[in-house]
Image (cartoon, rainbow, N blue to C red):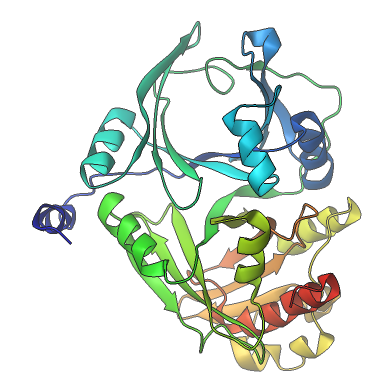
Length: 376
């Protein structure tokens, strides 16, 4: 690593050059945004928020924004072939394109990250309408994924300039999802250290947890994972890399079907996981199945918990603990026909970790799904 970058990192140790205030929104490129928005409203409990498309002067795409508490998803679809959105969907299928981050100064965020080696995807751009202005900038990360920096301190509109309020008579009740806890990226063979270095150097993140193939493995497959976090802990990006095993791991399967690196899953926080998962299942969301034997010695492994084990076992919710408490988590099956994107539902009861004690049970559940698809 060059001397300017090294000296930059020393300076970053004293001041946070990229203060982040959490995830602003997650944008998905999809084949049919209208249907995708309807699915996430129906199945996950989002509400209509904003729309952008031909009626608002945008000619090449249509975008629907939905919201639930502090969680905002945007679904964007191309209106014609021969543009980068259509190309992205042709290559990857439906998937995450943008992880947008809240900042106080999008110009500073862009300058600080690009001077440290980040590749610009959008120079600071001012978007304005009658509700004020938003400054947006962006850099590239793994695969075709982008990080947007969103500065909206001088804006009081519904979402972003260029969007209008989307009013709908159909707004199902919330399922209790609160905000993005973390987003996990899958990268290729021997790419882990490159992207760990990227987040450390370019964004000033630090590696707060590491798992190797001894931690995350079964008889057949393995992966390595490192959790990157910004200074205040509001934004966390675990990064997965395949590891050698007898058969194909879930990360290899993802890379094959996504045709490259990308976001594997988005973890959504809830304050009551039993209530949330019960609601999601009643609306048709499918989850990985966990053997009931997992719960036989649960409290011996994680200690005393507040929840009754019976509903946890019935729903397939996993539990893990660290020195600061425990967490409850569950993973959906892929939400598209390609075995790529899925979601995690997580409730933290003090724990800051990422469920290391559940990796074996989770991996075995994923392998059962892979075997059904003929991809193990």
